[in-house]
Length: 306
Length: 255
Image (cartoon, each protein chain N blue to C red):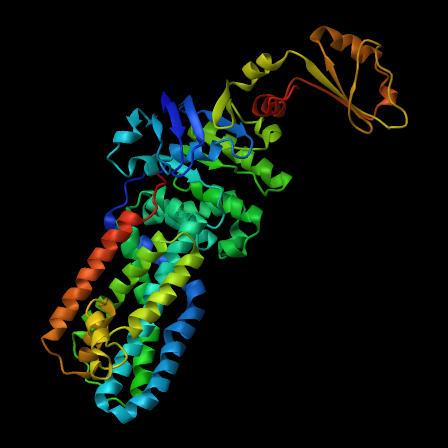
């Protein structure tokens, strides 16, 4: 079932001449994990704000479960189905962490008893129990981000839209976020749509990706499909002591990424030979991989060759 | 994590109660200002003006007394609600509320109610301190229970209108400060009409604060006249109009 059906969506903010985003057409299926990548100012946040009806489109149409926003008369339809996490970290004003979870869940339609249970579940799930009585102003940037993600999930809305959920988080917390999102998607069938700059880590959970550049959607599809569009080459990364570079077959030319770090592009047919000839005692480590989501992002968002 | 939770749309009453409780959490930052602007400032003004008013007779003392209570209510309701709305707008709180199943009219009402509740302690203390310092005899009328919210709520609604319309919290702060002193100074609020130029008395007819001071004076000190009915009517009208305007103007969605 199609959850979001976006057609030729364009937004020009009042007083601006440039479109924040233009002519975006996109469909998102129920239960999908959809990632939105792009540089700052590419129009991603505007797009997700349009998807939660915080920004009115200048042209085009959005349908949520076949109901067009433009003619939607029920003000509760979108909020009852979509949990949204904005970028702003101080949105909860003077509420403590525990209060923010309780009130969000209660206003999303849970009974008082269920909302209290939901509050405790979220505090435990996100390991925020020690911070339950803190107000957002007394939290670190990372803690605030977890509060926002958890509050967006309060009441288990069937769709989650998250604007940069892993910003300000340390690697361990980032892992936790991706793990919980994947679990929600698997066990509850939650449709998850998120913006991220963390392409390498997001790759672990993204099922389909949209890449935006200067307000337009320049790529859309499964990462594996997009990778095929970019190239079929594999990447061999070599890590070694700068004083003693390894020997490579003569027809391979390495790109020096850093002192002691080379990147070699290989055709599939070259892999066996290259690994056979590589003197493992000359390298500290090596990695062989296909194009990553970050490579796709750099290719489509910046027009860079990868 | 597998779970199924029954959800139903929150009723208007649930929205009002929850949003009022959420807004009451603002006491965490507002209590310091409640002491300074809601109590200390009106009491200092009351003492200073009271020194001069004593020689002008009981009418002048009554105006100083009621006028300064209105001043405190203005700081606590108009000022703080304006501050809160401009802050909510700047910090994304309005967007947070807009993505929940709540009605914006209910948010405005809940904000007005919660800041009124938070202004009550300082208002009651100012009345008691003013009564002691100025030695004015209180003749409390039961309608005072209706008059205090009727004075506070239109001021809060005006504050919401300013906060929701201002571009930044700084702009909202400047406008409200200017408005508080202008409304207090123009018209017979702190100073009796007999001591004011006629033009200021005339201008005062267009200020809700004049009616607020008049209603408070009658229900705190007596006598209650038919003017109280007009005062309450004007205050009620301003409350409804401001509430309607703010819910129209509030940047719930970006167009």
